[in-house]
Image (cartoon, rainbow, N blue to C red; front, top):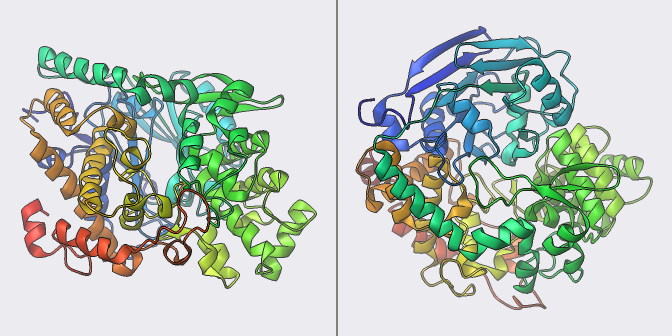
Length: 606
């Protein structure tokens, strides 16, 4: 660790819950430099250690909590960590990223990563500080929601500890279960809360005081000042996100005709103003709650007359609102609180309810599901039913009533009802708010994402809708394959460093290369940086291929490919994905079936 010690501890803590064994291992410097940290580090270990075709809910699956080299510094947004495993929702590689302060607390214990394997006989939680690591009893915590769990563990351990835990959704192995950290932040997508639940692991508690150092303070301070200046000058990161949070996007995306409404049957929501970031700020805003070391401060706390909590974020506003045809903001907020407290992904929960609404209105619900929903609601389910959003988010998060079906996602529901075409998903993961028919670059991003229908692996909305850092025509396919590759490789690095993807609204690849050089002491140029991102992306691709994914999975729902909008600002814009996919594979150096060949693997050192 001679060259890079400081930015990394070079240590992994391996916990086997079956054997109740805990041991420290060295992380080879070659892996740290080749995969950076966070998402890259976790993906590398998962690929190397997990047997192909492992059942995601078996004791053989593994969880990797991984930090990045900038955590523990005061670099802007240097708080994000990754959780990597095999998804019980998709069967693909799953990596979720979260902010707050848990990641910094984890790194302050002296470890860069936790590797959790096996299954405990009874409910347990992990307590880790710089002096010890213990597997502790959690039987009295089982059944508690995430907020209750955090309060109890803070009182039992240390009031300043970082805590990541599951709620009833994870305990009941629901495929949409999330992991909630620091009470208000979520590792939301792909069901990793169910993996924790399958291991009888209720929570991970971390607390430490070991510092992250840099090799040359003068070089680091220069790079750090550059980041702060650019982030402080860019309109989105300086003002907009700070003022209104991510729901500032509501009006913008709606005006593009890409605000997916009524389960992607429309692209425009007439009542968008009733659920906008401005309206949330006016009626329900409580206070700002920024992640550690974050000047952007997009995270806001809200409160109603009876409850309080974090959010809703833009994606949640959409999923529990327009996706379900709902314009009642308080119901959206209460549904959001339900998801956070029970520990379930808000995007997938809302999209699954929207799918159920369509199935119900078309008479497609099977008898069991129909009867369970009627029992939960006292009526049939229809678009626009705000009260149903509140009640069904609670059911989906506990697994009670209709939740035993809805809690496993839209594809499970739609297949059960014999109409899989109504599930708006990619690789089993529900799509986000941005209808690809309005954003042609995002169509490829969503189709090729290794974890499925997720927008956070190449956020081309920045250039297609926000003109940040440049404006690119959203209805053209020209250059979109290359832009996707650039953004995919760069975002992989951002996740692996431990930074927030919102920094890409202000920074360019040179900034990330300079910062990674400054914290590690290594000479990293932009070309090397992006090549490292490419290495990690290809490794994730190879993981999915090993699990049986093919070119046929790099696609979008038939509705999006074959049913153009008949109104709005994206009217009659055909979406032909196949030529774009051909170009993307060619530029990636993959075969026509999307498989990295021996030359590409040799080039990347895989």
